[in-house]
Length: 533
Image 1 (spheres, rainbow, N blue to C red):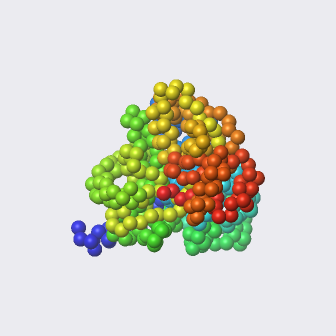
Image 2: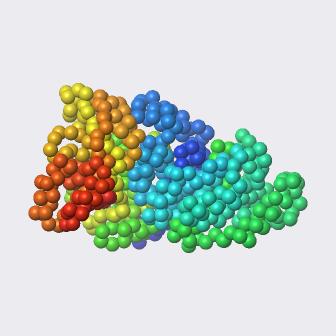
Image 3: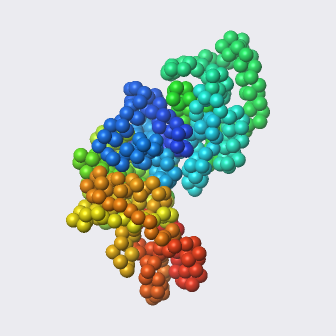
């Protein structure tokens, strides 16, 4: 294939790609909506396939039993499916607040997000935190108001709640007809199409009644006494709400809103049909030296997630790789820039939840899995030509700390291997104080400690436990003056540790003690975040 033809092929494939994450507070219906999108895309054939797959995994992986017991997700699922000739990459993020750091890194790899709001609860705490993360990158947001089959807030009250708490303007593209026992369906404002709700019935493409005029008698025939309420609602929002503005949406300041019931698969198709039209195709990405555009002919991309032991029987590790430009071809040679080595990617996969499929090619926006034998880390860049380093994939200073204790010293080798590999995933951080042989775990959320102990047992056959430690603040240390840095380390040796990446870290007991150190050492910089190497 000539370079001109391949360039045309890349541009055509980019236009077909949509890569997004689903974000929500736990129990808002994230996994259910994911499943329904996969149903429409033909990636699964029956309801419950995603949940039952998680149940099967639970048989062989103790740490995933936490998902079952607490009703949460602790790992990111990445799924690829086709809908109306669009290639869609869906990233289902962890729902628990303790896993927000993993969610943030996932959001660095997407071009858009779908935010789910529970009709009865409105904006919840984790939704606020995730929106703050999206706002850092001006990520476009599509909103799905879920659980209309149950009683909840008035739609206008939900809009006020979203706009007040999340500082993003709402424009409805569908509108609910009643809720709970009175829920009759959703009206597509743009298409003037009425979809009628029937519990237990899965609507298909082409369902719905075309209403060309809200004064049409057909509306009264179908909705009876709710027809006038719908007319009043539509007149009100058309007069009060700002019309949908694609430019404001792409800037992350304006969200189109859809209503429905994911568990009943209602209102999902309307959202998905609009999504493929308005969600952005893969865009440019920043590196230390320049912006990289997806249409460029040579492959580039970055690793945003490492998952150890996705298949417990094979003890494998997969690096999740976002393609930013060019075309991936099976067996191609690329430069792994952090270690300055050429590698050949001979076995790349795409995902449908935990099922994998080997691929021969992929394009910008696609997420592929690369088998990792311990040389790939989060933030690594691979390119076909020039050296690049993609930016914007940070590690956050942990907020909680525990000392981890190995019960059987004969298992030290497996213990260290487990800590190293789990730290590579980015969910926990491991610190070694310079004055003793302790192993200190740091995490953004405390649930990570339970997950770590469970995974050490299940995946590495290591019995360990953790205990409290009098630490609550960590900052990475840099200083241009190496003599001053030596003095700082010497005078604060009891508070200095090295993390698993070899970064000097200042660990202390309070923000007050941190402030004291910052004031006493003006030449030393204390960093709350750092970029992955």
